[in-house]
Length: 245
Image 1: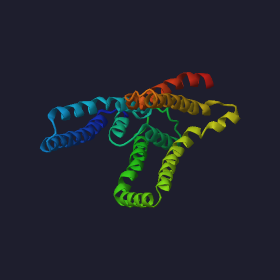
Image 2: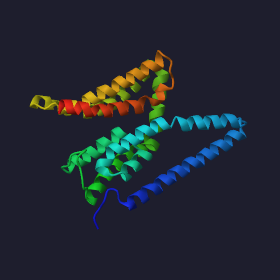
Image 3: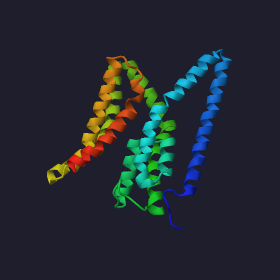
Image 4: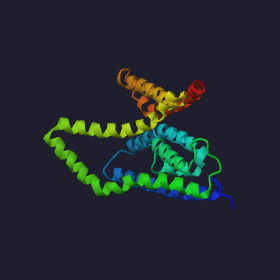
């Protein structure tokens, strides 16, 4: 039997896992609603909170759909749907899939007809790696938090610098992936500049959203800044690729 990245059995397995996650969400929503009523919260306020939360999940959901479409060409729909519905993000999943494919001599974005072995390898890299964070939380999170609290009590300024440095370090890891092929310019090819230009377009859109929130006081923009910057950035990749070749 030939392997298919869009096999019905994959959709069945993925659908089962996502159904369990949704059941958990509904369970805790019901528990939260019941507890809210027990402590005397007004039912109208509870409904308003629930509706507001539901509306504002639409914006992140747009980003997730875009991410699934991005990965679907190489990996089919089932695996990206699972990864981005439970634990995952476009930046991580793309890098993981790209690294796994490169290790097997494949090129991300132009893969067709993955074998079952290749598919399992890519899925394992995408899944096991990101689960390290889940495993580390019960082991180091409490110690790390206590250390941060002690540092903040001793010197608040250095605690803020340390937190900012860790965040910048995380961003720098992703920036390295964006700039890793820039050296192709010295070989007569400008294709390495494509991800840099796409990132610049997305950054401009995000900056404009920030200006709108801070100066124009348009608070709702903050909830849609990420998906809009993703959409515009990905759309800009088409003319940028045509321009740089």
